[in-house]
Length: 392
Image (cartoon, rainbow, N blue to C red):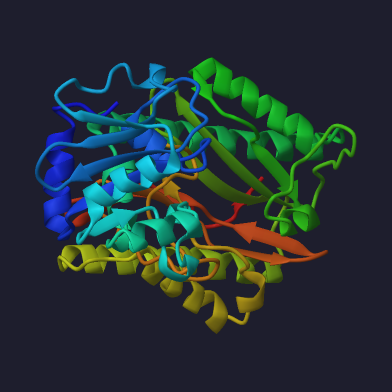
């Protein structure tokens, strides 16, 4: 829960952002951002607000019969309890009237990951005399910035995942040449065993997809529909995991059982060069002290693939935030395709960089590395990203 210690940097950020405060709202869990920031636990079925002013004392606006989850709310801060809706609306108005306030709102739904406030609540708040702006960069700052521990554990996991992927490729190649090829699903199970040996955890996956199956970005192999990995296959391995208490790593690698075709080499070069174009743009702009937005990195990667003639086959964003709220986290994404990502890649945030080309019925390829911002530097993991298709 918000504390007298945690409120200090939060209020400083509000002043830096030029807003009078942040109005947090939730109803039955529809706004995970508010719940995560406030930190309440327990059964809450009524609307609640928390007003965090840029200066002064925070105010919780809570229902009178649901006080249990608010037992840790600091006694020095106000808890304005309501029962009837006029009391609720009056309490909100008393906090925000005449002020410019941040909420989980994105004009035009440009960034849906921070667009959780219902239209009716916006109408109520505006009718109370407030001007509402997006909390997008504030969300990034307080939910997506990595700690020193996050950076250290991520770096270790990134190298471990790379080693597992390359070992899995070698295993698939050896099995194919022996005359007893392994299936996609069996290889995922072997990798899970390697995760367990290293103390790595994952929520699902990893994913192994061969040739035409790799043309589905969300393909998931199953034991019920076995696909053997044989000579001539292109193999995509996508794997993600974290050590207990650590930060996620999320990577994708490509290999060929036998020499890859000229077509495969052409597609690989396009995705690799697109990845590197995004990295170059980010490094140059960060070094110059510029405010870098996630959409710009997506544009840089996409331009390469379009120029190579594969634009219509790159059907997803270039990257997603990786942070404590999840593998696909709350911070700025590298995206100007699916959404208009307008948030800045702040110091300390981490994300994936993963352009892909997916030609249905033929082939799919993706390269994925991770990166985090450290001052004016972009740190890419693993330390040595894949440069050529691995031949096994």
